[in-house]
Image (cartoon, rainbow, N blue to C red; front, top):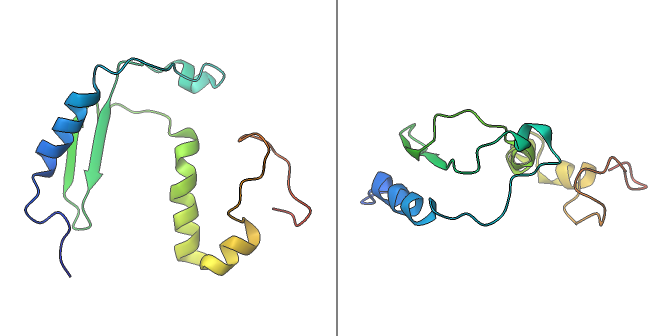
Length: 111
């Protein structure tokens, strides 16, 4: 199986992306979430780990931060690998609910 990173200078590519984005100042931290309201908006870090365990990182990558909702796709992928796609679609579903992202409402099927 071909390594998709073969011949790619991943560190240099991450650094180039970092350098392109470091001066981006649009937007604001999510002040309605206390943990995110504390975040320094000037921080930017990136890290990628290969399947072989090689870590590539640039910027403020070693600064701890709250992952909040970005955890959802990782947990969903874990659920699929552990339970299978059919069970995840049955229990969780994949369609937008039409309610706020932090709603505690469930649909009539208990999802």
